Image (cartoon, rainbow, N blue to C red):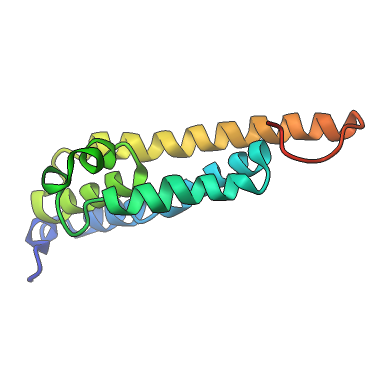
Length: 139
Protein backbone atom coordinates (compact mmCIF):
# COMPACT_ATOMS: atom_id res chain seq x y z
CA UNK A 1 0.00 0.00 0.00
CA UNK A 2 1.10 3.51 -0.63
CA UNK A 3 -0.12 7.04 -0.22
CA UNK A 4 -0.24 7.04 3.57
CA UNK A 5 -2.90 4.37 3.91
CA UNK A 6 -0.66 2.03 5.92
CA UNK A 7 -2.42 3.08 9.12
CA UNK A 8 -5.66 1.65 7.72
CA UNK A 9 -4.18 -1.64 6.49
CA UNK A 10 -4.99 -3.70 9.58
CA UNK A 11 -8.44 -2.25 10.14
CA UNK A 12 -9.60 -1.54 6.60
CA UNK A 13 -13.32 -1.75 7.34
CA UNK A 14 -13.35 0.72 10.24
CA UNK A 15 -11.20 3.21 8.32
CA UNK A 16 -13.55 3.05 5.34
CA UNK A 17 -16.55 3.67 7.55
CA UNK A 18 -14.92 6.66 9.24
CA UNK A 19 -13.76 8.08 5.90
CA UNK A 20 -17.27 7.76 4.48
CA UNK A 21 -18.76 9.48 7.50
CA UNK A 22 -16.29 12.35 7.22
CA UNK A 23 -17.03 12.67 3.51
CA UNK A 24 -20.53 13.57 4.60
CA UNK A 25 -19.44 17.00 5.85
CA UNK A 26 -21.05 18.70 2.86
CA UNK A 27 -24.52 17.25 3.60
CA UNK A 28 -24.09 18.44 7.19
CA UNK A 29 -23.82 21.98 5.82
CA UNK A 30 -27.16 21.64 4.03
CA UNK A 31 -29.23 21.75 7.25
CA UNK A 32 -27.82 25.25 7.76
CA UNK A 33 -28.89 26.49 4.34
CA UNK A 34 -32.54 25.69 5.01
CA UNK A 35 -32.85 27.66 8.27
CA UNK A 36 -30.79 30.53 6.87
CA UNK A 37 -33.14 30.69 3.90
CA UNK A 38 -36.24 30.47 6.11
CA UNK A 39 -34.89 33.08 8.52
CA UNK A 40 -33.35 35.50 6.03
CA UNK A 41 -35.09 34.68 2.73
CA UNK A 42 -32.95 34.57 -0.40
CA UNK A 43 -30.14 36.33 1.48
CA UNK A 44 -29.84 33.14 3.57
CA UNK A 45 -28.31 31.36 0.59
CA UNK A 46 -25.66 34.08 0.45
CA UNK A 47 -25.02 33.68 4.18
CA UNK A 48 -24.52 29.94 3.67
CA UNK A 49 -22.10 30.55 0.78
CA UNK A 50 -20.23 33.13 2.85
CA UNK A 51 -19.81 30.84 5.86
CA UNK A 52 -19.15 27.50 4.19
CA UNK A 53 -17.47 28.47 0.90
CA UNK A 54 -15.83 31.86 1.35
CA UNK A 55 -14.70 31.22 4.94
CA UNK A 56 -14.79 27.42 5.09
CA UNK A 57 -12.76 26.40 2.07
CA UNK A 58 -9.67 28.58 2.59
CA UNK A 59 -9.60 27.74 6.29
CA UNK A 60 -10.06 23.99 5.76
CA UNK A 61 -6.33 23.39 5.61
CA UNK A 62 -6.39 20.99 2.68
CA UNK A 63 -3.20 22.22 1.04
CA UNK A 64 -1.58 23.47 4.23
CA UNK A 65 -2.20 22.22 7.75
CA UNK A 66 -3.89 24.70 10.11
CA UNK A 67 -0.65 25.57 11.96
CA UNK A 68 0.72 26.87 8.64
CA UNK A 69 -2.33 29.05 7.89
CA UNK A 70 -2.47 32.79 8.70
CA UNK A 71 -3.85 33.51 12.19
CA UNK A 72 -7.45 34.32 11.14
CA UNK A 73 -7.82 31.19 8.99
CA UNK A 74 -6.12 29.07 11.65
CA UNK A 75 -8.55 30.31 14.30
CA UNK A 76 -11.67 29.31 12.35
CA UNK A 77 -10.23 26.20 10.69
CA UNK A 78 -11.54 23.48 12.97
CA UNK A 79 -14.63 25.41 14.06
CA UNK A 80 -16.20 24.87 10.63
CA UNK A 81 -17.09 21.44 9.27
CA UNK A 82 -14.82 21.96 6.24
CA UNK A 83 -11.68 22.14 8.38
CA UNK A 84 -12.87 19.52 10.83
CA UNK A 85 -13.52 17.12 7.95
CA UNK A 86 -10.14 17.72 6.29
CA UNK A 87 -8.21 17.35 9.55
CA UNK A 88 -10.28 14.31 10.50
CA UNK A 89 -9.46 12.60 7.21
CA UNK A 90 -5.79 13.56 7.59
CA UNK A 91 -5.70 11.97 11.05
CA UNK A 92 -7.42 8.81 9.81
CA UNK A 93 -5.02 8.35 6.92
CA UNK A 94 -1.76 9.31 8.61
CA UNK A 95 -2.31 8.83 12.35
CA UNK A 96 -4.53 5.75 12.59
CA UNK A 97 -7.65 7.72 13.59
CA UNK A 98 -5.96 9.07 16.71
CA UNK A 99 -7.51 12.30 17.96
CA UNK A 100 -10.53 12.58 15.66
CA UNK A 101 -13.14 12.78 18.41
CA UNK A 102 -13.13 16.58 18.49
CA UNK A 103 -13.56 16.78 14.73
CA UNK A 104 -16.45 14.34 14.81
CA UNK A 105 -18.05 16.42 17.56
CA UNK A 106 -17.78 19.58 15.42
CA UNK A 107 -19.32 17.86 12.40
CA UNK A 108 -22.05 16.24 14.50
CA UNK A 109 -22.80 19.53 16.25
CA UNK A 110 -23.38 21.23 12.92
CA UNK A 111 -25.69 18.43 11.86
CA UNK A 112 -27.73 18.48 15.07
CA UNK A 113 -27.85 22.28 15.40
CA UNK A 114 -28.71 22.72 11.73
CA UNK A 115 -31.53 20.19 11.90
CA UNK A 116 -32.89 21.73 15.12
CA UNK A 117 -32.85 25.26 13.71
CA UNK A 118 -34.39 24.04 10.44
CA UNK A 119 -37.24 22.33 12.29
CA UNK A 120 -37.86 25.33 14.56
CA UNK A 121 -37.71 27.82 11.69
CA UNK A 122 -40.07 25.78 9.52
CA UNK A 123 -42.57 25.49 12.40
CA UNK A 124 -42.46 29.25 12.94
CA UNK A 125 -42.87 29.81 9.20
CA UNK A 126 -45.84 27.42 9.09
CA UNK A 127 -47.55 29.21 11.99
CA UNK A 128 -47.08 32.53 10.24
CA UNK A 129 -48.59 31.25 7.01
CA UNK A 130 -51.52 29.59 8.80
CA UNK A 131 -52.07 32.79 10.77
CA UNK A 132 -52.54 34.78 7.58
CA UNK A 133 -49.19 36.59 7.61
CA UNK A 134 -47.36 36.91 4.30
CA UNK A 135 -44.88 34.23 3.35
CA UNK A 136 -41.28 35.42 3.50
CA UNK A 137 -38.21 35.67 5.64
CA UNK A 138 -38.70 35.51 9.39
CA UNK A 139 -36.09 38.12 10.23
